[in-house]
Length: 611
Ligand code: G6P
Ligand code: 1S3
View 1 (cartoon, protein in one colour):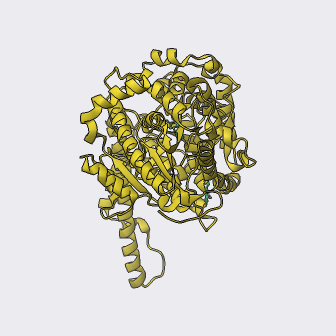
View 2 (cartoon, rainbow, N blue to C red):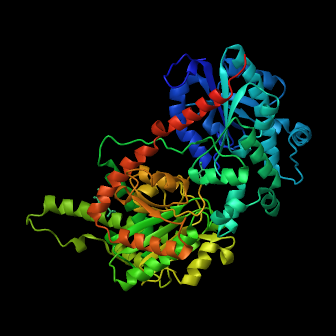
């Protein structure tokens, strides 16, 4: 093991294994936590840092490189497990920081699943009554992790090293109760990134926060038919030496729904990289806004046009949790904004993008065709330009009089007609669609239902236009052809007034790209940022109060904030772009990793290993 010394951590005697279901397996936000943190962890812990994850992602080989000739203690334990017929691989996760990683294929121990569940029931009184293939994978993975860590702990003990194991969320934590029961010499830390019941209750109870202190977890777990998971989550929370969560907001849920106060809060960070040239953030905004302009022209301009120099791009993004992520409030505020902008005769247009994931059949054919035709018009323009350029050059070199020729005459009739015909067949009387894809459940979709009821359907007279894109954005996507991060840079404002959000990465991702963001005091991030000196509108943060305000007042507050933003000057937006980036540095892992160090110190102090 490496021999690095730091003041805070006694690293030569500590080894850290971080376990998460999302190592080499992107599902949601925990992936971002582990991946973005890897560079600082590797820098600090060097070879004493190790990640453990499941080998289940179909594309895992693109992200993971096995180390076949490794000769350290980790590799030795992995070899021993492989000798038992288990599919375990030791290698490097090919992300920034290149952390050492062990991947366990749960299918290789599925033959033992009956026993795994039986002993879990016998030892921890947790029943697995319902068939759940995901739960089977989770239990098999936990069994493998437990075996690996038990063996690795022995090696560490022999080498006078303390082994810490940090488990993220219940799906990675099923080894904890056995580690505790068997008194294996490992300091365990469990981080919950949400509580299962909290998520369900918030979605279903409009007074969730008022009712939270009086909830009975057992009754609610039965109501939602999630009894097994709720029990596993509690067993992880109670079995770990140190319990942590990502925000003060979720800490309250831990108290009431898990029955234990967290010992520490570990806020989520990002790997913030600033450009050495100050204006780069402005240039990139300009560049990617142009690309969004192209999409907007393709989508709207066949029906009617508006001034692209007076347009604002707003967006929200994330998993489709209509109420939890505040989509309901955002829609209500947009309808009000539309009305206010019309009433006040404001000479601006807002285009609002909903970027989320809902089941769909395909991209709407009309949307695709319109986009393709705009490209055809662009190609025509380029051909005409080429022709004019060549002929003009020729005329300049050969004509004896030095006057500019009549440019129209330099274009062939063929191109004139083709130009005209393409534009004519592109123009249409139809309204631009509010949704870009054919949804599987169009009739009951909550966003579409709201838009239809509010009659917010992209009429020419609407000041607020909607583009609902029920798929995540990636560079291979034919409508935008850009990465999500580039899309964010091209926008003006991200809107995330969540009702339930343990942390919420989306607004931090905006700030890191110089984009302003709306957050709420019920999100972990919002609650954290409002206590920072820079956490204000000057630095691009707009706070919606949802804790002590009803839905309609919050919607009104949001619509007023949006209106204020629409009226802001370009000069102010340029200034805010730089300041938002300044604020984002608060969320650099280099600053936030200290909370992890404190949790590890606490685990070691609380439970010194007896030698
Ligand atoms: C960047 C560019 C400027 C552009 C501005 C538009 O700062 O460098 O050239 O005018 O963005 O900002 P806006 O908020 O109006 O999109
Ligand atoms: C959770 O993912 P989610 O979107 O289900 O974990 C994330 C990482 O800690 C957190 O940012 C988010 O708020 C939680 O809800």
